[in-house]
Amino acid sequence: MQISPLAVLVVVSSGMVAGVLFAVALSVVPALMAMPADRYLYTTTLLGRNWDPVMPILVLGTAAGDLALALLPGPQSARLLFGATVVLMLGVAGVSHLCNVPINRMLKRIAPDAVPADWADPRPRWRAWHLLRTTLAVAALTANSLGVALT
Image (tube, rainbow, N blue to C red; front, side, top):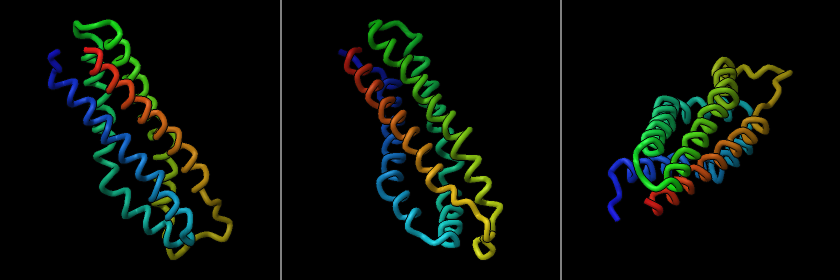
């Protein structure tokens, strides 16, 4: 069995996405949920500034690599799994772009020292969307791993 470098790359990159999202769900989100609103707003600004440019590249790069693997010659079962991973990673990107990112952008417009009295806390909604994209990312990693095992 010979595994292509691209197959190794998509397993590593999907593992990074799943690992980051899992770590955020396991540790960061509970910490943010426990903070008062002003500290939460300040902390989310700090956390997002390095992830924001990197995660879309990693997620979409993984999807592109999986698309290539789905279209290249190889066992049909592996190609189907790589194709499923494309859909799953696009799901991660979609949930991020359409659900989590708009909340993040709204938070950036609120000064931590001027939280409005009628502020509707978005943390439960953000967490729910985050857990969905984390589940999709773990499923993508699983599909990629099985796809590589079948090549």
